[in-house]
Image (cartoon, rainbow, N blue to C red; front, side):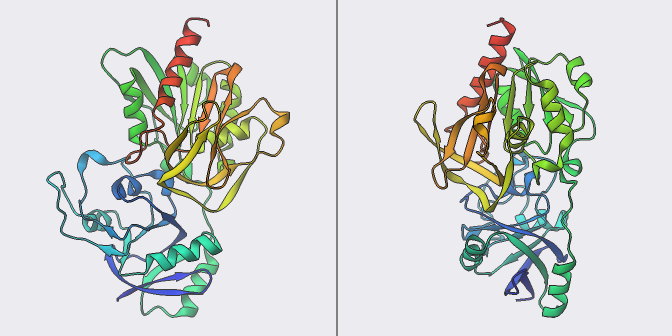
Length: 361
């Protein structure tokens, strides 16, 4: 047990290290997914976070070249109950340990993740320090007290210049605002016949309109949506001009652009089993989620925004729309890699909105 986790509340949990031996401080969050650790690690939305996996066995199918969700490794640290370093999977190309070593991400194993998850659930998300076991408690607490969370997370993970993802026989051209976009969102848009141009988060309204898009997509991403005023202002300029579809951070920024507010959840929603009710159809969808912030309903009656989906676990807002402007958004991830596929119909709704605007309906 050569490493340990020191929590902001003063608790220490001994563990065995794997991956990088680097010392890191970040916000601790837990994810309840049973599979998909590679997709979680390559999701930019986890930037500046240490992820705790509640499923006890991690690493057993290795890392697969085709399954990354971005070129980045988001989390600063990764905590599991039992790490398996001998994958059983004909597709794997490297082990989880090798991936973490290459990207300087420390991992912890042989740690009671059930106990840790209960602490985060009961006391809320908090900072954690991954360090060597011989670091004194006083030194560790001083490092935690001195840590200041960065506010430029979207700027860190967004692409630096535009790039393209094309498909055969395209029907539509979509511009995706990259705040930390996941590859499977782009794959789904391609499957629905969309050529996608991915642009940096701070791209101007004039530049986007010059690309002559049929629709605008607002991506997921890390951190507080209020720290991305450039995109919030851009949404206000684009509203009514083109159909807009937002996911996760994009959903929150649509809310902020239309007079609503956001707030930080006690411990967030992360996993592939969250029940969400579609208020328009009455159907319940099992969804994939990863977010710390949610949209407040305060003052919604004074806006044009309509709530379309709610989380059945805590009644938080999971979907919004402004029908007359052909704008809609979801807090959860309908592309869900890996995860349930109940919500992929939302991409079809985006296609319908682009068709309707093209035809003047």
